[in-house]
Length: 298
Image (cartoon, rainbow, N blue to C red):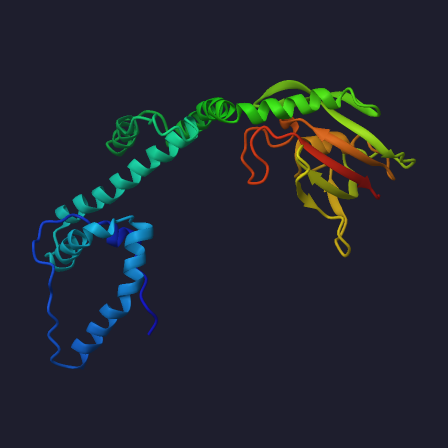
């Protein structure tokens, strides 16, 4: 028999403590008693990890956890009490939700927290049928209002890095062989003017792609400090294909490929507005300028 996995809802619901006794003696009178006891022992390591990693119970309060576990496991079925205990579980999740939202709108500034009371008020009013706004409409409004707050918080957090990337582009525009082209893109329903910079390494003599072309290319992507974050130039790698009708790449790539005749090899410099903007993509931090060496094969 495989070890059972403790469900998060089940164990999060029995964290209240009221019983003083933390000792339960096994009564092993037959094979079923022994079977049950062995299962309990088998669960111990998994539960220890679950307490620490999932429930985040400090080991100093193990006895309190045990008291709550005994009470939850031995209590008589009571729908009212069961609803209350499950409400406690969801309340903890609401608290965590508020903490996650705080980290987004305040960019991990631990001195600022969104009011959990407002989050609770929205949930409770909806549960009681007192809200006239649909959940879908509320979520759309939430996303619309979150974006500028999150961006402003990240601009403050990454102000130094953002300035360094902007300075790189300003300096780069003055270098020999670098050309700058203005482009207009749509962002958040608005037409926004920005630019791409490029340097021709190899002049292409083939056709320019159309809006429905599939472009095959080799590329290498770097940050302004030279860190390579992606490449398909290694031996054995297949050419990268971009269908310009459904590109599924950052907007900067689309704008650059439209300018590159087949056979071209360019070094392309993309401002964050045409890359990932305020998103944190791991190696690619918010507001990063991206540099690509792109060779259009076909």
